[in-house]
Image (cartoon, rainbow, N blue to C red; front, side, top):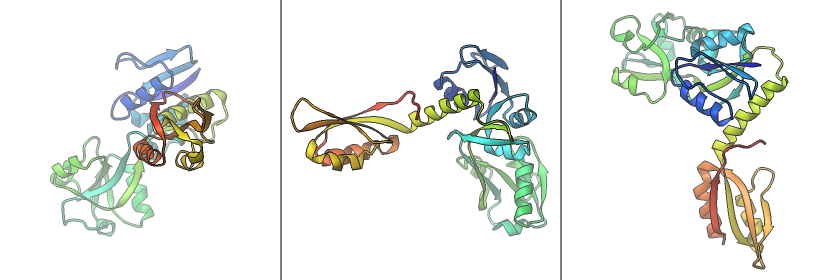
Length: 282
């Protein structure tokens, strides 16, 4: 069986389980379950702490896993990213009291508190900044108030927690993170079961990104319409019963669907509709 690590809690857990369900895999019914077997798909899922997943995958005991890019890099595990999943996006940044630290260079000789010691230490070294890094588990916003550090480095999603703690970000982002599929470095990427798993997730990503658009248009305006809806390999075009009219079907980006409908209507398209895509293979 293909052995897959899945986040058991946190911001990665729910979206990962939802994506796996959309991809046709059985998921646990109770949060207390740490392992389930999906015999129909020949897959075994292990529900682990997101921070530990890269370690398990790098050991070779598990074939692949879903975790955050930040957690993968911070672990220094012998594992690599093979597919970004587009959810749990965040930015990793430095923050401090307003006016206390204006730039990265100002961190010289100071202490930075973080839950991601590996990422921060390497980043500071790469930038030539000699600063101490202290590791804290959990929320680090109070480290400055309690005198543990002059600055922090943490994941920023909306910035609300930082503002509530009276902090502001400074400098360039350290990195951008999102959920990713990982494997052990050097593992066989052509293994059929792994490829099937990746194709299913890629199908979910496409289904979430596109909708199917259908419309009718006069034949003399077809080329103009196709320029608006080129599809992937090209739209499907079929003649209608009414002479001079054709029906067109094409995949279009979900975020642009309303604008595309406006553009099509302006050039004479009618009966324009969109349909959600639940699964696909490209």
